[in-house]
Image (cartoon, rainbow over all chains, first blue to last red):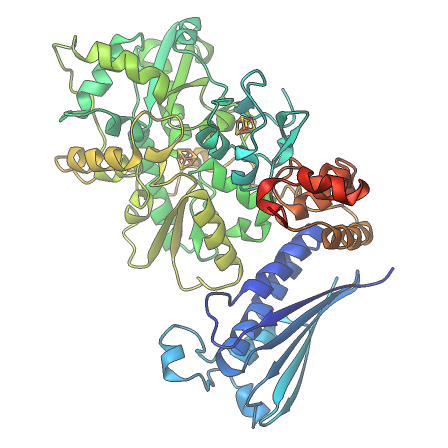
Length: 140
Length: 430
Ligand code: SF4
Ligand code: SF4
């Protein structure tokens, strides 16, 4: 049995469409009949990641690979990159610009929150180039 | 009874297969086949959108006629507070209640009483932290049915108390049995309903074996009769006994404001309800204490079995409420009585998934993606499915053929002569 893959483009500063990719992934997982708790974890983590891409990066691509054993989501952005990953992983840390923070986004819940909901998270980042976050959710 | 009883029905003789309803159905539960609408019963949540949108009045709500109340020795009417907003120039709710009594009902029990009790019980339970936040209201049966098929993860957030009409019915029957020495089966308790969803909730309750009600009469059916009777009431007995809190439940926001919280939200209209449930699922509303959800625009005053425009009804209720006390009914100081809770929990009903087996579902999804690539993705509806994706799903499930799509059919035919077979909006040439 092969895998199912989906790919979505995310645009910089496009708040009208922000959440569309995570919403579509959620819908697909519901159609497939995955456990609702797992779906919710994926939805929350991917939504956070998607919003991060809209706020911090110059947009990017989200891909989702689904197999009966695991769901793997890769959030790949072109953007500033993260200079200090350890710092960014601290709860409450945020680099969101003030105008975005006033919208209620970027309250610093980003990366730590994503990690909380995924079974595995890998961050590959290069300052001035971009960030690639690979999330794995295991089907239990 | 049918496994999937629904009040929302189709009168095939009136249906012309125009496709208006298939696009409006929030759970994609309707297809057009052989020129007639066809419902996928397990998906229907009785929201009434198709009743509202059908220009041929082919969709209707199965319900009791007013004459059916004669089957009972003692009859109790349970008016939904939305009924109070239906009449112009009315300054006393007692008039409505007295008119009901003239129409063959021995007793009138206001649903708004039940609403005040449910509000009080919810306040107590929330203070004790009984639910996961944000707490979601359960009074609208459409919302409960939607949550169980599409948002099962949110079930622990839902208030597990009986809806006000059930509570009012239970108390009214008990009172009649005691005061008039009647047997339970001699009493007929009828809800004066704004919507088909409540009728389904009576016929096939989600939260117990049997409803406390015996039937429902539509506001729109009883309204003209009431108008006639209104002119004839001379003496008005003072029987109204509920306040602003109870009557306020008729309009979106009433239930939430009755909880006296600083941080609540109320959302009305089925599309808005779906959007907000998505947001709750994505953890975006964890800081909100309570969320009131109503499937109908403006709440129950917008039910598809009401007689008056929801905004007008809302405005009238505002005036009527002005002279009422805040509330007249409360549960005692003890714990919430166990009769007020659901007898059985809300259970997930996974009817939206492709298959019960993930490997099969993935195989089907792969085929669906392939078919979708072939389809024009215009979502025109001519195939009888609400979207190209829905047709692709139907094909894979074996319910439809890819040639149901007029564009696919055309591809099978000779090109030059067939351009004219394309519907005008999609033709490449004039
Ligand atoms: S809206 Fe639906 S039920 Fe009404 S006529 Fe058209 S296809 Fe039939
Ligand atoms: S909002 Fe009220 S009238 Fe509309 S479906 Fe729900 S309970 Fe019925």
